[in-house]
Length: 158
Image (tube, rainbow, N blue to C red; front, side):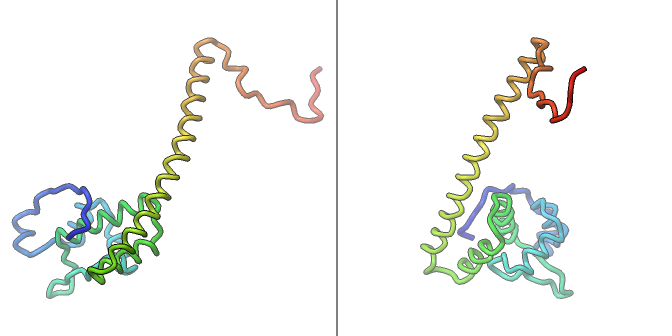
C-alpha cells in the first residue's frame, strides 16, 4: 500500500497468520477502533478495497486494511468529514492518474488542521495565563478579588 501511516507493527499470531488474516475483533483490537466503527467505515465506502471474506462470510482483515483503517482514524481525529474521506478512498480505489486531486484534497485538510491548531494554541495561551494568575493570587491570598460579578440591579447593601 503506497499511502502509509505510522502504525504499530505488532506481530500477528501464528494462528492468525495461518488463517490468512485477522478477524474483525482482532482488527478492532489492533487498530483501537470498535467493531461497530470497522463495519461503519466499510458500509460508508471509506475503504479503498473491499474487505475480504472467509468461506463462511466473515470479514478477514489484512495488514494493508489495518494500515488504511489507521489512516481513516487519523483523518477522523483531525476533523476530516466522512465525505472527504470517502472521496479520498474513491480516488485511491481508482488507482494512478488522480494523484494531483488527492494532493489537493490533502492540502485543503492540512490547511484546515493548521488553522485549528492556531486557534487551539490561542486558547491554550489564554488558559495558561489564567492558570498563572489564579495560582499567583491564591498564593498571595488575593484570589477573592478575581472576577467577582457586579451586583445585580436592585441588590442593595444594608
